[in-house]
Image (cartoon, rainbow, N blue to C red; front, side, top):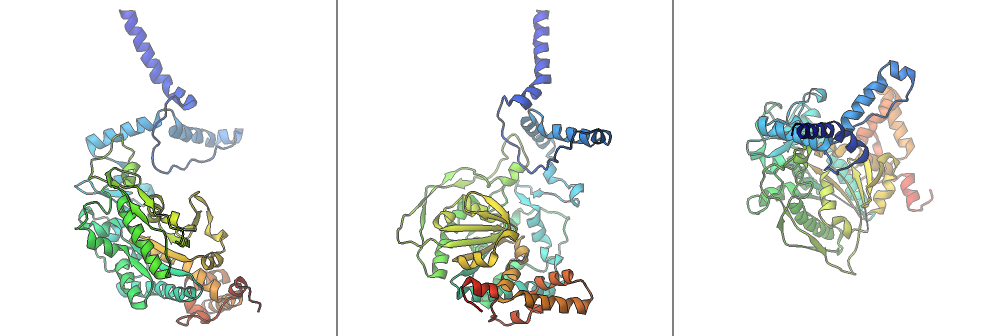
Length: 451
């Protein structure tokens, strides 16, 4: 009996010692991957110098921490233990390595809200651009003016430009924004409200999804935002897609394909729980039901399939993945934060600097700018400035404005050029008209016009 007990203990000890090693090398079991971004440094060259300066040892230690066998289940077990007994998650704690900020917040009812939207609720990100509401309005009115100019110029080229004003979770469910003193509670400016009013005044094409969600919040029997996710719900976005297609039909005076929404079922589909997934727990958090529905595209041989470009934030992924929006287009382009470029559904991408922006826009039938409340401030990341200059100016115009500014401020041409490109309407005379009439040589060449 003693020998049997010793044998069992020996086998168990061997398993504990060698199972992680066997899993690492032979992948005996398939585990659910951990969620999140991990940056792993490349392995340094095996040299005596790298050994003596300890870079080889440090890399080996870091590599083993991220790649040991059974890492996924052990990490989830530990995270679940810390959550069950101490209500602790690293994502809900301040990170001293990242300006002492949190990834997200949780209220007493178990609603998760990502930090940018908590900040927007309490303080508003406009404070990073000016000191008061008047200064903020003046700053963002420049973007509105450029969008108006582009809309009018592109209309004549058959390209319809419009803005999708998207809500954030804090706008639709402010009752679930947790109490915190991490941000100043003196918000004086909402860019979502400002653009909503300004766009109406100027006649800028836009769809205010935020206002629509606020009006329907108390009448629908499904969540517009999931309890443990950061984006609009997969079910809500189906209805947004339907309305968006109808809006584009009206804006472009065209007929597009439509779709029917299938029967709703209680089901959580990514990214309805994307914030929860980042916690890497062993069990799902208790939450209000999420819903999912399939769709069927209505075949119509007479329907027009447009060329479509979107410049926006991560909300657009839901529109592509949970709805047939992209499938009723002839071609789509996704310029993510006007930086990475995604083509169609193969998710191949490159940097926006490699793209002929003017040609792509003029080839398109629709250009949509789509940002949520906390990201609207990034709509001026350079798209409107670059396109306006490419449509209406030549290098000589830009060089003249650059040299004049460099001389007046006694700065380098490189610095002056950056300033000019941030607000080209101020420094380039051809762009000061309400609707510029001058066109660039590049624009003329696109149309095959010789100068």
